[in-house]
Length: 348
Image (cartoon, rainbow, N blue to C red; front, side):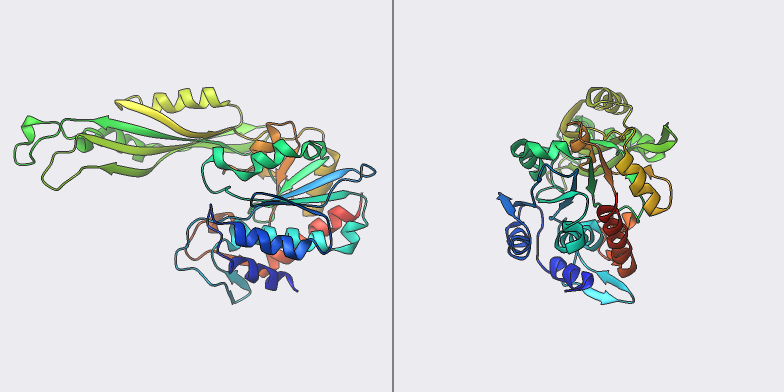
């Protein structure tokens, strides 16, 4: 089966977060013929270390965001179009072919693949956490590669992320007599205008540029057309660079949202660190042929680096296509990522 055929097959298996059983079973059925597999819920670990060779671990999440009329997959003008094509079933397809590759199996590394569920949902529910807790040998990896979309660049570190309810409180009243109450929605107007004008802040770390951002991504308020709203709740999404820990990032978010009556942090994940003095990473960068860049979005590189596991992002997907209704990945990207990683895993 070609890389394209594998990707089309994977895209066509619905796997919205929380509904990964079918795709996990399909991967298990295919890969157990070539390597030992271990199922942990709806996550799958393929391969195991021998202890005789350095360990490299490949990671890919198997879930997607909800569909937007972008199923089934289509091959169009040298691309595969469909839900999750870039984020990140293209990376998963490359992982499958690497794990099936006989020269990779006989190469200088023990190669293990981790396919995990619930990455696109809240960080606390992410299926990788359970896998890492149960399989301590994953912490022994010389390098871990998360095949998230990176436009074929090596992306190191990653921003952390916070989500918080920013709450404005008013007083309900009949809309015909608004002076008897206080409109919680319009009370938020000055703050929303300031947020609209707020520019990303660039932060340089070791020559890598991360951008700290704040974005209002959801809003909910009001109960009827003729009732002055007494409560207006907005989700504030904060992306913060690796110079801040979770407590510092939360303090920064609370300062930005200081005009609100209440701020409730609902979900948080740390930023990912940059591996230091790692020969395997240096060799991967050399094979890619261009210097590494900072990862703006959050990935499980953060979860791995928090455990002291050296990890980077490298994958065939297009960053800007993630979560789009028209999501696609160039077939050439699939082939190039596979070529680079075969070279990486078969030489030392």
